[in-house]
Length: 207
Length: 220
Image (cartoon, rainbow over all chains, first blue to last red; front, side, top):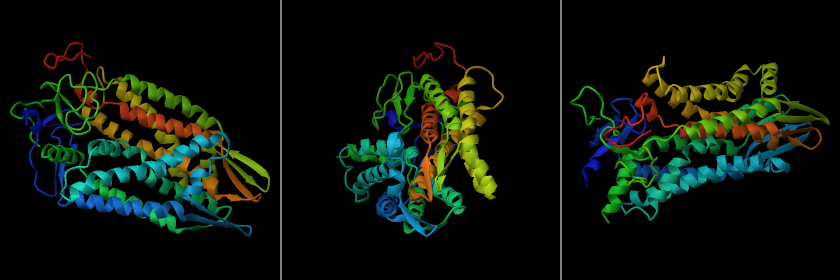
């Protein structure tokens, strides 16, 4: 180990810190700008794995069950997330269809799979899986682009807009998606990026 | 955490100590490294990402934002009568329904936030050189807010997608997307990329002259 591995650099303001071990269930912040540099949670790896798996199951429910049920003039129409994705598929708007699919289904699912791939072997105490670094880098890079929680608010706004012309009921997929958002938030609070990288590096060199 | 230069009055930065910090994993890499030795992320050549991509994405976002406001976002057909509404038109409609709260959310997400973001990113990029009214900490906060809030502008695009999927009751009522939905989505994506490509460490570096970083050997 060279001396630079005992240092940690703030990603926001470049301040250099000595990397110290911090007590469990506490966080270490940058001296200058207050960015969180380290967080310790007991059993974080196991919790992240479990929450990511739970989120994956909910994702399947959220995609295929109807999330809104509309009745008007004696006609009924149910829409699932799949329908919302295919909504733009007629004509030149197909690109938008693909974009919506990527933002609310593909990226969240891929991110969850990547997290399970990275954390499951570590939670079991094994060495990190091959390409675990690439998988975790991917998971962190797509984080701002996985927009399930924004979609939820979109559903709420759409409900109000439609309320004027038809009767709308919320379907099971809506609740699955809402639970998914809660779990994702919970999972991300357990995850400290820098701590994960250090653990990955340490366990890799140990092999 | 303890700063490496805590004995001095000022904070020692990685650049002054001759390191390049990795923004992905916090590793202090030696100057000249192109790839982080811990996580494998790419490191910018000078230790700092340049402003060029920021301006490029910002201008792209601004250009896409113009048609997003001029062209219709939604086309609603009720018994064969088609009505087109723009972003602002949709907000006005919501106000007419009496849903002030939702109207405010949509107005905030699709009008206020995008415009505020354009101004904020441009302001942050311009004020890197020279004196500013906002302190370094305030500009840092501004950057954090911009980065956090940008993705929420996608709400309107999702609303259009949901409405289009849901309201398809044969000829009675049908909602279809307008071209503005696509350009608005592009505008939001471009501004998100602009915010992501901005390197907040530039704010803390302060105004720099070429060749100023003697020790680390980098020039900007």
